[in-house]
Amino acid sequence: MLIAPDFTPETAGLLLKKKNRILLQLKTYPQKQQNFRSLLNGVIAQDADLHTETDADLKTATRRTPSGSEINDLLFANICVKHLKSNGIALVKNKQLVGMGCGQTSRVDALQHAINKARHFGFDLNGAVMASDAFFPFPDCVEIAHQAGITAVIQPGGSVKDQESIDYCDAQDMAMVMTGYRHFKH
Image (cartoon, rainbow, N blue to C red; front, side):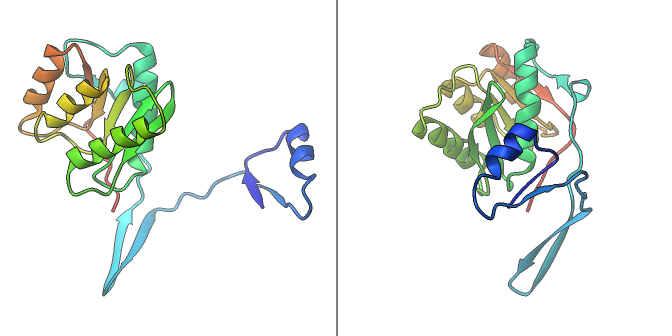
């Protein structure tokens, strides 16, 4: 069974060649307002994250403003990272998710996992961008990202030590934008 908002006649014809395949057209996708996760002795209810940033929401924190293609990648990376379990890191290049790290107790571990995955699959991280679902309490993540070839970063901001990460990015000619909105997923 395949579900999509629409199928071209050519695509539908090709897909229906397989015996017993069902195509369903879902014209509207119901947005759930809450997510639930079961625990050993209970349930966590979390409001669904229906927020998606646009370029108007981005506040450049560094001297270097991201290029147009970096902004497109940053916005796409931010969509990706909001669907990862916190601590989440998404690495994107040319609007393609090339690495992700999630569900780690440390943001550094999540970033290293994302970098290792990208390299394992042969992706070149030079010129890629990084999204974090939360702020950086220390500049270590932007340092590691820079060493891997990342050129721009999107994050919510809000750490008392934001300036340390901004200063590192400025020293390395990296761009950093802040959204003021934290995506968090249990």
